Length: 238
Ligand code: ADP
Ligand code: MG
Image (tube, rainbow, N blue to C red; front, side, top):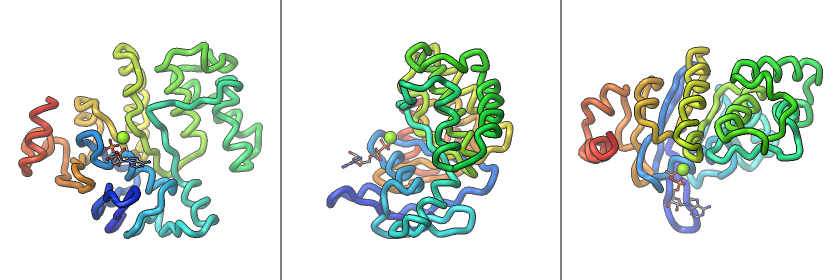
């Protein structure tokens, strides 16, 4: 991302974001509510064209005016939101298979084998024929993560994936994300779970007012923040 500016109406929400993420790297965005974290993920995922600046994914700069360019970029990433948004009329296995089969036009048998393996991996191998409303929030979110992974993204974006969960369900979803981290998945994470962010991230970016105010390894951001605003934020939440 280079020089990204995004506005809603006349309000500037991203005010010059520069950030590059290496393959296999885990970067977390932290910062107060309204600082632009979700907007940044929306821009990266092609849902919101920036007013200025560019986003490149695996070497290709997204052309937001070109549907095919957007399609190619969307094929390279997947995003999981706070609200898991599973399809209520499909069982767990179908939820995971539907986009790879219908949008990516991949072979159904192959996708099914991959979907089963992914659901096993997130600990839901025994829930294939369950429907979303028969699952806990944590289980639904793990299905949403398996669904995202079945798209075979180069990068996975996670926007506060534990914020809607009961406290006792947060750990199982964080453990799932840690497993992806151990597999060297490229991750861009927005989270308020600071212990988790500190443990899993290679770099942490502190955002406020649409800008990255400070970025560095977790030991810096949490242990020795350089900017007064980072210090204030970190001391408030730790
Ligand atoms: P964060 O995820 O860090 O909490 P957001 O990116 O959601 O922040 O929001 C950044 C700012 O943009 C906030 O002031 C928010 O009110 C505003 N905003 C977000 N979405 C919209 C929208 N669809 N229309 C207008 N303003 C929006
Ligand atoms: Mg947000």
